[in-house]
Picture 1 (cartoon, rainbow, N blue to C red):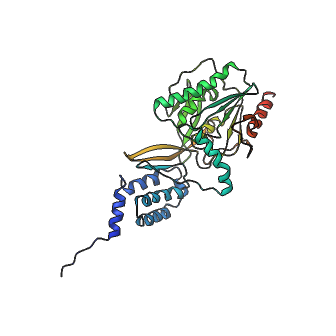
Picture 2: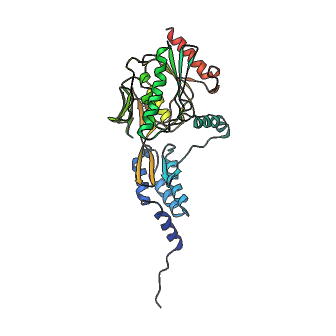
Picture 3: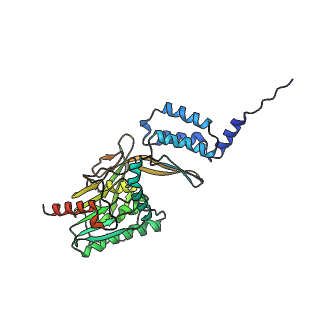
Length: 340
């Protein structure tokens, strides 16, 4: 009697699941394995074994994508994301109840105030600039935000300001290009940061030229500048906190090493100081992936978070700025600095 080989139905299901991803699973996995800036932190033999087991047990497309999320989790990579069919897949940090209770209201406020720049003149002498999360994408939006931030700071040129408070506490990230261009009159026309590879070698530099942000020689913004303003010698206090992450952290790093600059607040969110790139695998599959670290103008590399010079853990008041404990401390520091 002739025997016929009957396919394993589970293997067929697994094949169908894989086929719903527009590239071969191995291609995506290999890219992560050999390009992650955190790739030297894990035992890849163990990660390979765990990934294979989870992939065999996958029963849906979501299960399959969770296999990749588990790899990001092994890497402790909270900054990379995979976009498939307009859905986001990533490993996000977990918080205990007390920490979550503290940061959730701040994070909610940050989301609410995305793209909303705020400036104020405090006590008739201190310029306050809040740089929010910046979700702009095309060239027109990028340049409009950069120009708006630049012009908001330029408005202080008619005032006799004694210093600046740059508030990054509600900056959860987004597009770094317009942030740095908009802050150029304070940061100065110069090299402000670097990107480094897994061996701490510099692979790209960040520079401001005529108010515009240049990354690796590419000019990323196009704004009009006012040559008469130059605040780069003014003392600055940078406010940071647990919601400061991604491009917010990068903006903080750009101020590190600047003369007459002091940081107040709390460490920035852990794990968001990587420089990410976008990698298109298919029209419906995109990776926002951490490939480098960022170093400040003095080539100090930040591999986890940015720390303040003075720690203040509470006392937020974004409505009444003069009642905010960190702003009070910033005004005090600026006052003492200017008396030296």
